[in-house]
Image (cartoon, rainbow, N blue to C red; front, side, top):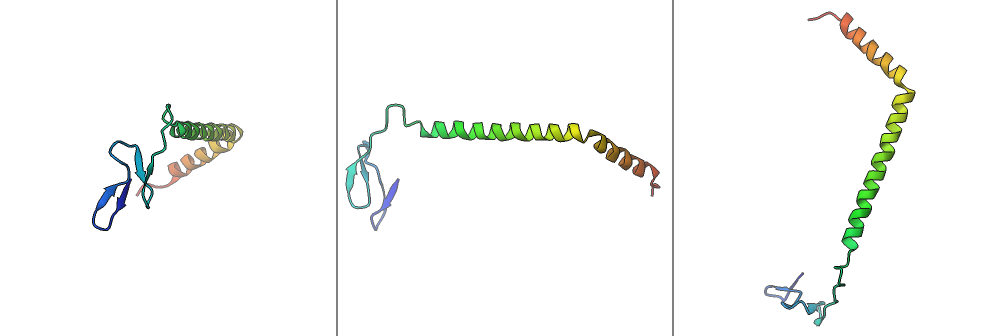
Length: 90
């Protein structure tokens, strides 16, 4: 957005946005598509969809693990509770 002319920083785009500085001279600026490009919106939607997909997959794996190991997990908690109950208080 800026370029150094040796003494100060200058904007790399003309005030009317019709020209841009490419390092050697002013060239016509590329026109922006009517919809504004939309590449940023597509990327954001893709990232959100990927995040939600991973979240759903992890949730399914956790539920399956909890359902298959519920008896073992219950045994661990009862053993811990029994151990805490049998230890003397200081």
